[in-house]
Image (cartoon, rainbow, N blue to C red; front, side, top):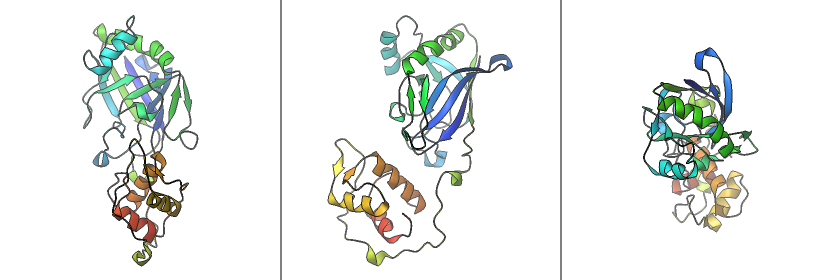
Length: 253
């Protein structure tokens, strides 16, 4: 069996795609897919990076937390988790259910519906995931269990092989005036639960064009990563002294 994932929209937090069965040269649509966003492997972030395009063999994983959970949840059909093997710099990549990129760490999520992830849902969203899984999983698992080789090919149709196509370039002027940078406590603000809140975060949010509510949530993290890439800083999504200085001294907003 030959499967194919066509990725067509990589955005800040997610990748939208389509899953096909292309066995024997015939293309049959199976479901919508959702993954984490694209990053070059040199900038891989654990739990926030989709796997590289390529062709990989699928087997069944019959141990681990997902397997135990799905054995109970889908006891009439579960044979093991569909496991995508031998991926450079990745391990334990599975096919499973979920709705947003928060449910995946490089894995592939199935859905019967999908929202665009450009402005409507930056986290990505697929709906009726369980229904899609119940339909798509059985024939794949049965093929593997019967001894048939099952392969999946991930194809990047979102044209992001070149990093510069998704990372904004530094403005040509590159003007910095560090004399106007406001005083900063040196505290590191990051996405966590419960969320961090302060007047410093509020001041920074206002400066970089975010809704200034003082809460360091996902939107703040995404903006921090965007600016860190532009200013050549470590793209870790943390508001620290360096990002604070460049945010107020630079000519980019």
